[in-house]
Length: 179
Image (tube, rainbow, N blue to C red):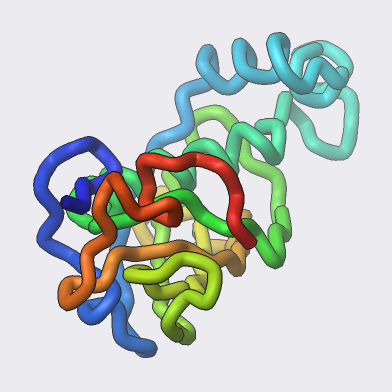
């Protein structure tokens, strides 16, 4: 039996993820306290954590760690797609580009696109889906201003017609990478 990313019964399978399909993952508002707390814990560089130094720099204020921005994307992806998809672990990111700084209070909209797909050679009962995502800063008027993050990655999704079982060594119950 396949489960969604949140453990619920899935509604979305490999067969549903056709190239050209897009998902609007909504708007995320950057919480300044959370942004700085993340940086203090995981990426304590001055332009992320020192308000005075950042204010005097070309940034004008502290900017988000790229990994924090990536985490915001991941939350939107889980909420918007993985919470309903028969997904397994991802075999990896192919491209990550931070294209503009992110600031406290920014409103970011995220668009996910299915680019390609094929049956997985490494995981019987699954397909590999190639996805791209773009996070874009919204202006005060709600109109898109500039992209802040671009991703290209792969995800494994169970096939509706051939669900993996826990006894299958390539099933999601076995977290070991299989290629």
